[in-house]
Length: 343
Image (cartoon, rainbow, N blue to C red; front, side, top):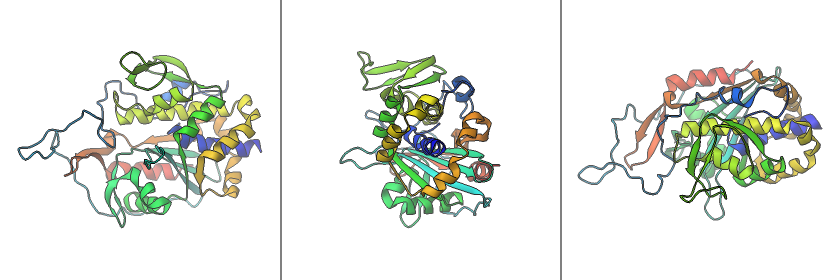
């Protein structure tokens, strides 16, 4: 039962946290070491656009008033179908989707992670997909990848991944931010190594007179609301740095969950997960994969982490003025092949 819960906790918290993170067990790697495994930190990274431009942001226009790129795009969208990726039969793929759902406002899946697990060895890969990837939604149009699930459910999401990346995810988990906050709080918070100060707009009690909060550098204890703000802050840093921070949170939460205190509170946490997670993952698959959880917690080298970063995309502005990221297949496909054939 503990193994089953721990695996379910691992999968659920990955999607709840919007990525992976630090340390809660004495024999695990330090949070500082883990934070350097995923995306190379870049404190000078330029700010990248959010799915809908922040208030007060505008683009240069031509004489007709049409928004213009700040630089000549190096690529334009293509409707070419990617060749099918060859994936070993022993690999199970699970798409983790974190929604920004709010009452009466719909949602987008601003967190998109792919988990590939080798059913024989327990080797695991985690791949982060930027929410602004501009892809073809088969049967619909070209659009950001984060609207596939709300537009056509998991069926359209599967078709989108097959069309654009050459493989079809087997399963999915979808959750929201409210559940994440409650779970972090039920654990008593998490400890995260912050490599440099983050100062950004927030709506937390700790905000200053300008409506901003700051954390770090160094080890920081975060409650659920602070961890969610840390994962999703997007006005003072790049979206790629946002991915790194979210991954840090995910691992920190996983190791905290694997601590004895968290296991002892399994019923309480399990109830929180089941209230906040939508999935098509069958119980028999969870049970089958659950046996690998203790080994993953003790051997972090079995978790291989990838992220589609700035070197793997082209920044582009659509004719309508939307700032998006075009996938570079020559960079992304080899990465996915490696991740989806984890040993």
